[in-house]
Amino acid sequence: PNPTNNSCTISGNLLLPAKDINITINDLSGRYIKQIYKGNIVAGQFSYKFDTSELFTGIYNIVIKVDDKTLIKKLIIER
Image 1 (cartoon, rainbow, N blue to C red):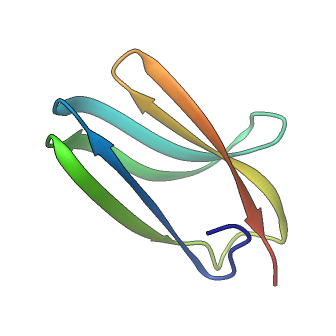
Image 2 (image 1 turned 90 degrees about the horizontal axis):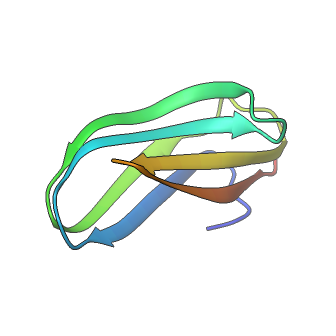
């Protein structure tokens, strides 16, 4: 949920297995901040919870790269 405080959950549904998924947090200028997940995910529903307590209050982008596709979602941190 947005805004978040100390943790965030990314969830979704993959129709096919993803052999190369990379999830990162970037600032709004595109600068890399943190690696969230790198690896494989099987087909079906997935959910991944991660800690945001070390991030400063602000707006970030969650960048999800699956194979050759990229999805960017906004993440708002409020303390």
